[in-house]
Amino acid sequence: MPKYTIWTIGCQMNKAESRQIADCLEAVGYEYTSILQKADLVVLNTCVVRQSAENKALGMLGYMRGTKRDNPDKCVVVTGCLVDSQTQELKKRFPQVSFFFKPGAHQELLEWARQNSIPEHSIPENIHYSNGIKPTAFVPIIQGCNNFCSYCIVPYRRGREQSRSIEEIVIEVANLISKGVKEVTLLGQNVNSYGHDLLKNTDLSVLLQSIHTIDGLERIRFLTNHPKNMSLKLIETMAHLDRVCEHITIPLQSGDDAILKAMRRDYTAKQYCNLVDTIRSYIPGVAISTDIIVGFPSETDGQFDQTMSLIKQIRFDTVHIAAYSPRQGTVACREFEDNVPAEVKRARVQEIEATQTQIANEINAPLKGTVVEVLVEGKKQSKWYGRTRKDKLVFFEGRENCLGKLVNISVTKTSPWALQGEVKN
Image (cartoon, rainbow, N blue to C red; front, side, top):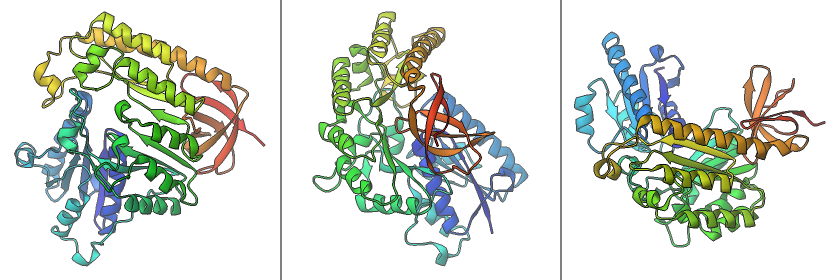
């Protein structure tokens, strides 16, 4: 039986698609191996959203060039955001790659497998995606993005938005639950846009209600949200469905209106704050995470201070910070000079990290002495770990096998990054 392995870098969407790729390959006769040298087929699921991710992908492609010299029969397949419509150019640039396919184009992968010595009778009509034994799973519900934020390469690589049908998603989620999954995270580059390209009156709220009725499902999350598309209907649905977790990620990116306009984000700082206020009024105690980009072209100290001010005002549970790096093909790369010095970007990242560490510590400290429900995801050394409904990471000791179980944990220690506790009897 031929063996495959998958190298994945990047966002949750890539991780979800790697799971689906694994299911496709196993359905047509491949067996997984974690050892790259033993694999007959190596899939590289790439990311180019940031320069560091692209450098890693290019480094891996360089490594595979040497591997192919040693073993010419090894097949290398590449997907992810490195793959654009210019596949002929990619083939010239990376001759060590046997096949390129765009993100989510799993039918193309199956067709390639059919044409490369896989018996035709083993190609199934429908692939039922699995998840191994993990209790949590990512489920893509919409591909692509129509927003074209000036700094982002995703729409150029993943294309315009295309929603999967509710029926298809429900079948996948039900299949995952049958294999032990307890929590699903619905994914999209702009998850709030789900359904606008399907039948009338189909949207994320309707999908959430459809999934909510599946027996055995304990928790539902969804990301990434765009502030301009976060509707009141969706907020009300979150508040009324008890399986939808009280946690949401809403990227801010900048607290300055001029920078937001240059980013093509289509909202103001005030509109963002009003949205947060609305969410908190419907879902008291909701945990809110965000994304911030520092050092966008021409960002001044004063504009950065606007971002810092909003971070202190809103008090996010988690802030994911990135320093701007130009991506070839984006509007920002064409129209703006990357003129904020690297040392200034680093200093701004460090300032946000220090402030957010203090805020997270203050948010988490009152949890000491409380009892939280944890879905156990795995074990590190002697301690089990999992997350609360509000996405707080929790560690605790236990002799029993707790994997996939919902456990009540009494919190004994808090920090900005995680909670420690013990099983409540």
